Length: 470
Ligand SMILES: [Zn+2]
Image (cartoon, rainbow, N blue to C red; front, top):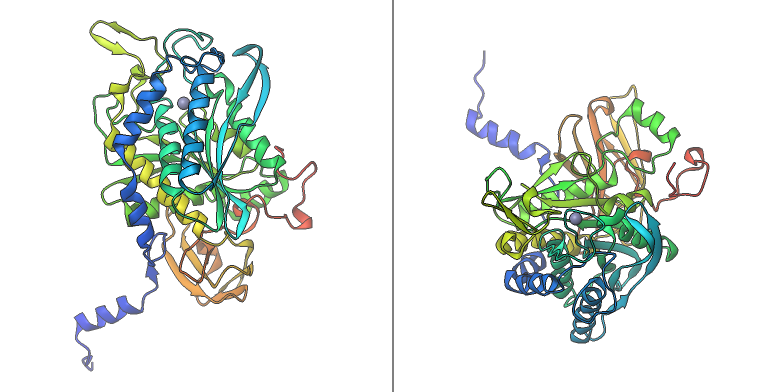
């Protein structure tokens, strides 16, 4: 047999160089802005924010709304004033809105106004595209109806509220093509009412909400098991869309898509950004809508058809959640300021800040993504070309991979053929890349993956109003 003229090591190097690029999102384009923004997040400012929130005594949804110093009314007014001050510092770039609705329910015995505080930073070129960060300002102790005892809520969810406020402070110094919404919600502990107020407000204003990053319990690093987890944060995402129609579910059961909702792609997008911009701080994706049998405001956004994730610390301490302040057998209970690790909270906030900036800078996720290629050696991917997109990237991964693995650039024609990539064996997706290199999350084909503001094809139309819960 004739010996190869190419040394084995060179052959290997050539093979590697010619192999498809393998990376999780984001694209190899590195954006200096994201490093800069991450560096501006200040643990000291977040400490001051949570100390101020704790100072209102209780922020229970049913607590006093008229006192200037105690209760949820004073706390909400303080947040609105903070946003207003930031807006003065950025030439009026933020609009402060306080949508509210009156609810009665199991944990709201008398009709009660639940009010959110929103700061809206209008997008420069596509203001109806909306990227949201949320946290809830209301707090509680052991009895969910106790509206008078001290309920510091430093971590649940003073930490999420501080993430929202700090993100607003950092991001309001810049302008983005899409709109950013900084949302401080109420009523979470009484039944996710503030999430519903936000979802209803977004629907009423025809916002195309591309993401809600809901931060709830993001500042404690010492778990109830005594283990400190300072280098990871969990990102929970639903696998299939809450608003999936039964026809979509039938096709999805056959062709796949159980782990590829838009919310899941947001989690993958954040995972990639952490790898690229946050050093040793990582995303632990959890393939669930929330912690087991627990809930958060993102659930109400998902019901309205808006892609949303829940961001929560890696290792929770249940002695510091929903507890009367007390000491029992030497164990201190209560959600106090000392339970917050501000270096950790700052890292979680950095993850949010880079994700918000990346999403608001990128083109919209591609629409009308379809794949075909049964009984063929090649896969064909189609999508609807968009004016703000310079090119696209096709992604594929093994059906058992958690993260997108292989990719190839595609022109903005709306169609590309992946030679010798058999449709049976891979999951596919498409991302959109702007002229300046910003890249959207990946969109999985068909109903399971479509971003919800997309018009479904007539065949997939479901009875009832688009976006409503089936
Ligand atoms: Zn909470």
